[in-house]
Image (cartoon, rainbow, N blue to C red; front, top):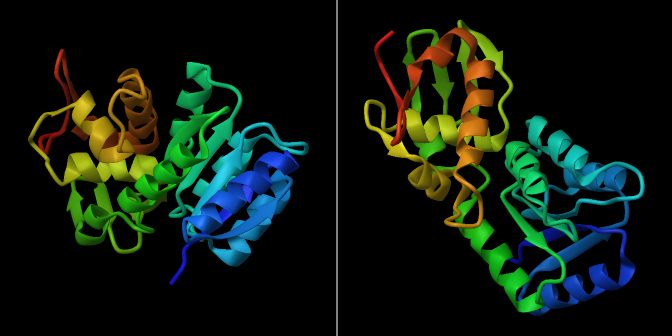
Length: 230
């Protein structure tokens, strides 16, 4: 069965070329020209992946990503941001919001198709570790099958990336994971993103977890670990 890619892009020529190359690679495609239409179509169609332009005529692509990743109905859909802007801050913001990859125009269509396939391979609708993991430590309870986390039985709203980061640490609790290892396991990236992206995401995750955030320990010069100790 063909996988569907939703293209949210207001440049008609670029969107048409992307759609043509994805169809040649065996994908079905749907294209919309605005952010609001992208959010509505993703909720309605549940595509396998969203190719999302950063600069849209109505709302920013980052806002589209935020809405998709904060909605339980769409937060498991991988998002690849496609933009002419390649500044590090744009990439960091995109990944913090839950984007699964970030590509900068101009990009060859062959590379784009390869990266779409790579994201789909590493980003099933619910990560494998998440499906298997359901446990409670102190005030924190994680329900992997439903992709939800609770602190003192109050649900915490986490993006898909934040949830994967928590699962990666929790499933290996007591072990120190380097920033590079977390980038590879959670983001599926090697040198494309700065390791300080992990630090930024970890701070956001600690803040969201409140009293349970104390279990996320920083090991100076090495990385992070989830500790069972209070």
